[in-house]
Length: 494
Image 1 (cartoon, rainbow, N blue to C red):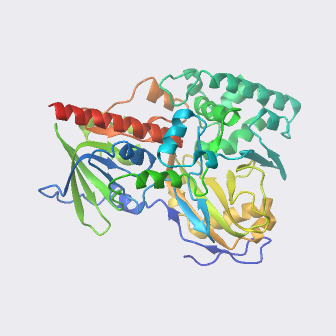
Image 2: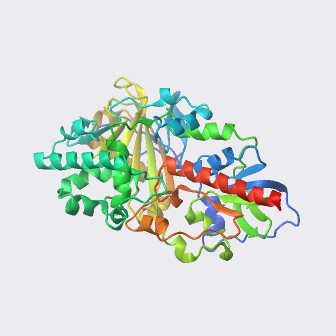
Image 3: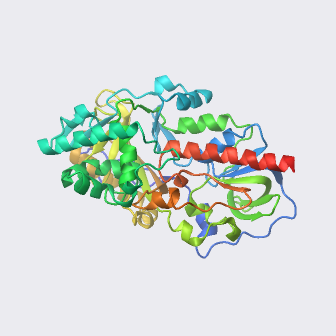
């Protein structure tokens, strides 16, 4: 752990600031960043032969392995635990999400059935309203993403009316538009930014764009002028929908990771960085290295590469059909999650609480929700870093610098809560999520994307859907599992 920070303004103690947690970038950087440690010699014989090897134990990889659990499957993960951005932690017996916190569609029949198959208590996890609340200029505005909530927002009458008309259109589009489906409805919206759409198309003033800014940076990785209108509208449909609900467990989507992992016959092999890949007509070989240097050679009939393209491009061979220009289209945000822990004197009306006009963090949740003032709790801050240049700075930033900045921001708005902070835990994610900037989805969905030849190399990650959400990751994992079955079936026939 680090030394304690300077006193928080208004505070009486010096909070303990823990070392960075979250992603473990070092093992991958050791092999893939210049000058790069060479893969080393390949063993003559495989250490492990399986039908399918999955590279990456995030939601896509675990979902693919779950749907292939009747076959011989191994999952290789570079980090020290499965889950990707779905991390959890605990404080004083209180579980809390240290990354991805919630998901949508628990009311949808197909999604609810899938969650129940995993043994997840869907009904108990549905978040009680208000799911969202806005904090602006010292006041709370509950249920801010609803017609009722919009009418209470502290904007002029014309702005509120414009937002209500937008909400009506979103409700109508929801009937015909499936953001995660194959149909690319309203592609013209992808060619412009959300800010441009709101201000030029809808005639809304900049204050309306600022209203959506914390939502955009948190959920889409960048500001409204940096994300496409298509992506923004797709996400906001779920927020403004009268039927929509979110599902959240105390430890966030780490509960989903735990259920998927528990269902696998073979547990993921963690701490294994895949540093080399060779593909022939009838097999694929993977060379993985552990931190101590030992190697593992895996031979499989099919390989699912379930990581972001920022990592997978190091492994895909030239004959895969993917070139350098294809990977340049994928851009990612960087993220900090901070848990402020202690007897915090704060209450908030929403599950997700949005901070309009605050640059240090975009939103926060409290765990446990609804606990009494000054009870021990975790205040989980979501602090997306500036896009596109936030990642290098994040990797070099000392813990105390980031923690002090966030503590001071909390003290500006909630001084009594800041005074009770005893400990700060920081979690960083250098490639947190793909950013759907204007034109990106058109490249993926209309202009087509290259696919690896022969079919033995299968890609699976939410970035292939172009939308940074849990549901996209799950669907991509399901698609990859179906494709792997096709590959195995063709080999069995041959």
